[in-house]
Length: 277
Image 1 (cartoon, rainbow, N blue to C red):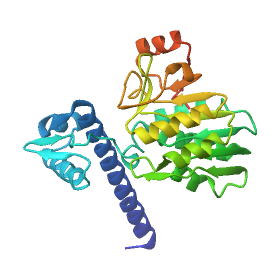
Image 2: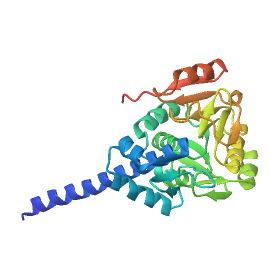
Image 3: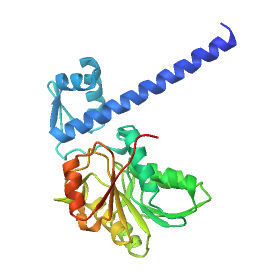
Image 4: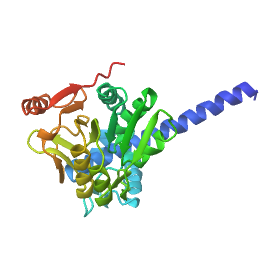
């Protein structure tokens, strides 16, 4: 085989492995979200939802069960005894074009030289990447993955908030984080949430994370919530803040229009991120 043929074969092989990995990650995220929303799911339903074989779904369920992300049942799976929060690594590829569109619209709200607060999450991470390319900014964050991405950018002054590490979200939370945030001021704060609605405000899965997110909002002149359509109209366990504390919601074009109307009526400005780019 000629060198050029070998190179082409190797490139195709690497591309195939990357695509397979991406599709598997996307599949796992959709399974976890489906089980989280409904409490359980069977193999037959998931097979139709994801358009893959039953054997593939069973392997996926076993993999997620081995990681204690759900509990296997006869013919399917269900939420474990402590509930289900989809870990960050399983959310990265889910709705990525929409999250990038939200991030572009959100980043446009940041004035040059601003001090920016950021909690964790996939959409907030996309905002951090855009700001890093723009700079200069000061970024205050409790997300270790965001800190790792920003630390090498000389045009970013990085302040990392300490605390107890949450493996599900890569965030540092708790009293140490809240104490640190009480001593700073930010011009704008971006919050990724697990639910936002006119009736229940902003919510997340974990109480410590909710308290730290609330501290971000309290420390900022302006709080902007970034949430894709799966979060709009949804409420989860722990309350972060009422909608009155949120100046702006940035979401994607497929968010529930009726809920967005209620949010707007409550006094929060809504911006739709355009996926045309």
